Length: 145
Image: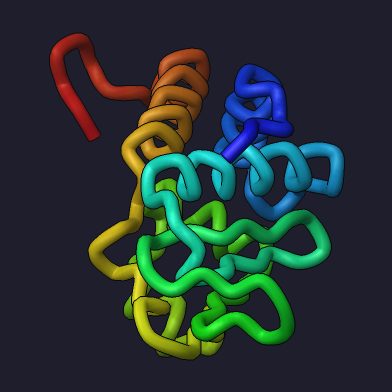
């Protein structure tokens, strides 16, 4: 897969989302979603599952049968906030699925074992820890959250 999102812009947008997920607008969500979808597709290359986060992006990932036309054999669709929460570890797949925030159909569409992604999880934790330290309520040296 060829990267289309500048990785630094994607990380910066993800960090901005992490600090205030409810206030994140299109200027933050679009690069954060694209960046994390591209990371997912790089980590799990293939074409068996199409991941859709409308209106921002869609990628094909996961090894298996690749489709070229029509409806893919497996589809995962969710909104931007849920996708970012999934890749960062803010919400578990089972919870988002049970709440109806994720629509998954077809073989290999259960991403329980593939999420969160280590890179996005680290970016989110680092941003939140830095904000907490700046606010004076972050973890003490040597402590973790």
